[in-house]
Every structure is written in structure tokens, then in C-alpha cells.
Length: 427
Image (cartoon, rainbow, N blue to C red; front, side, top):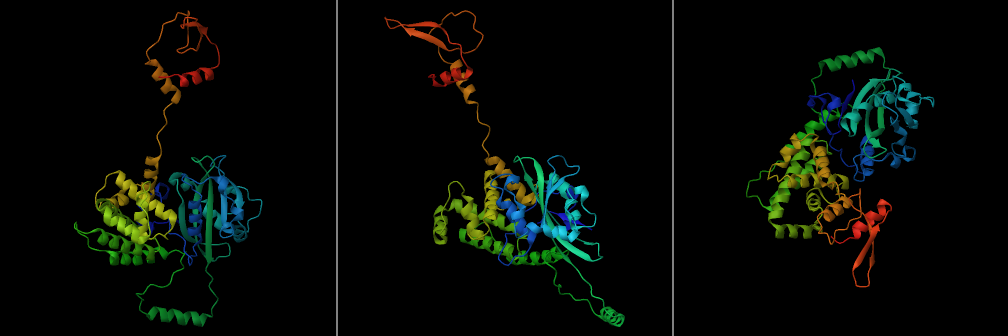
């Protein structure tokens, strides 16, 4: 059956809540030169369109121009409502796979046993999660062939707040079973029945079901190998070495192990605290590495020292934000890892919290601030002009020959003229 999950969730059995309540996912690894997983490349593309926003703008998306995964993608538009979203774009490969004609205009028109139906079945979960959702599963297509598939759904917005578009990318592999003579099938069955089970992991299609289980075992081994004993007396270089070695384990695991990543970020944060206490040693480390301290982003050089300056820039920015949030909360040595593991949404949730904290608060009303200042100003004279309804009025005065000022009366006019005069009034 289908297994819908955040991409960084390694095993469906790790989840003790419905998929619709799943927390924000950790980002998948950065795409490398040898990487072939289409959904990861699609995720990195989605990240590149964020530009500091919660969701990319739909105006920045042109799926028809994406040669890499555009043919394997679909755009779902539910700006008119979630009951039957429209499909303004459907890639050529998905059309051909499901034999879908151009008469398919909405989700309700999608054939039930097509790959496209597997993708559109999950679109409502995006609204609940407000983050990309990865999924992988297998099913039997119209030709009776087992089909393995993996995909990702990514939210887009027309107003930077409401999720009213979803862009999905999916790839697949059809398993074909050649027809064999009955005597060969029987012979193979006898050999398999007598053979002892192998304890070595067999190769798995990288994008197919079962890959996560093998990855978990490898990641746990890599994480245990990266464990380095550190005591309270560990110096700056020791902590950097420990953080770097654990970061290498994260890279070797291809970013799939959340445990390894959180341990690496915890060690990275501890290194940052020690670096803050030993500025001279830290400055020397930065100079040796060709890096510079950044007053506005002090954690960026830290994560570059640990993960490498060549590491994916988007991921480095997220890591630096997580470390900055730990510093904002005043966490001590060894505390960030626990926060990452317990915080709702994990790393993504902490990054979102830090971004919210950085946003400037509501600006005071400048006009009201001027009024408040004038309300407390000492009057120069009291003039009786009859009934005046407004709190503030603009007066016209004439200089007399003796140097005094004669008030002639109030000046009727637009509120803008009054506001301009109030701003120019000394107070």
C-alpha cells in the first residue's frame, strides 16, 4: 500500500500518528553529481524558489520549461476550492504512462489506476503539513505489472501565505517478469527451498520500497562509528574534529539519517559555544580555513567549518538558523540535540521558529506618535475660535508691526495637509 511520509522519515513504523498530522519534514540531501533521484532534485528546485518566504510564489514556477523533471510533473490548482482542483499542467511522461488525454482538466477526471492518481491522492496532506511531502510505494498498473514509484508534492502560493497550488513530481520503475519454461521454474523453486538465507543485504533500487530499511541499518552503523568521547575539558579543536567526523557520517549516509544529522548539529553548536569563549583560537581557525567572521550571521562560518564551505548553501543556511535559535534560547553544551529531537517539526520547525523570531515586529504608527507628542506639548497661547470639533487644527496667523502674531482663524483643508504640518511641527 502507499506509504506517505516526510522525506527524512526513514521508516513508516517510526510514525505513531496519522500521516495527515505528520510534522514538517527535514530537507532531503543536496543533489550531487552522481545523484539520480528525481524527487530530491525537485525538492532542491523548490528550495531555490523560497527566497526567504514560507512558500515559493506560483509566479516563479514554469513547469513546461523544466527539462529535468518537468515531463514527470503535475501542477494542481485549488485556488477555486479543494473539492475538485484543476490541473493546469501535466507532464508528457505522466500523460503517456496513464494514457491520459487532454480532456483531463481536474483531479476528478484522473483515471483511477494511473500513476497520476497516486500523486493526486495525497494533495490534501500538503494543506495540513504546510511543507513538502515525500511518498513511495508500489502498485499494479493496468497491464498487471508491479510498478514501484517515488514522488514529492510541494506547496506554492499566490499570496505568500495561502497554499493554493501544489506541484508534484513522480518517477517510477516497472518490474517485468519474463516468461520461463515450467521445468526451469520448478528447478529454481527447489534450489531456493534448499538454500540457506543470505545475511548480506541485496541491492535495492534506490528509489524503490525497501531502500529506507537498508539505509537505516547503514546509517546506524555510520553513526556509531562517528561517536567521539568528549568531556567538559574538550578544547576547541577537539570539538571541531568531533563535529566534522559526525558531519562526514551525515554525508556518507546521504543525509537520510535524522539521528546522525541532529548529533552533528548538536556537536556543531557545542563547538560554537566554545569558540565564543575562545575568540583568539576561533579567529585562527577561521583564518586557516579561509573564512571570515560574520557579525550579522555568526553561525554561518561555524557550519561551514564543520560541514565544509562547499556543502549545499541552502542546507548550511538552515543549519546556521538552527544554531542561532539555540543561542537565542540560551541553550548550554549538549542541549541543542535534545531540542532538535523533541521540537515539533524537528529541524524544519526550529528553522521556522528562528525565522519568525527574526521578523521585525509591527512598526508604530508614525502619525499617532506625532499626535502623542503634540498632546504633551506646552501651549504657546490660548486662542478662542468658537466651537472646534477636531482635536488638531491648522491656524493662519499674521505678523503684526510690533512683532506679535495675530491669529486669523483655522484653515479648512485636507487631512493630508494637516498631517504634513504636524510632522513639521517641533515637539
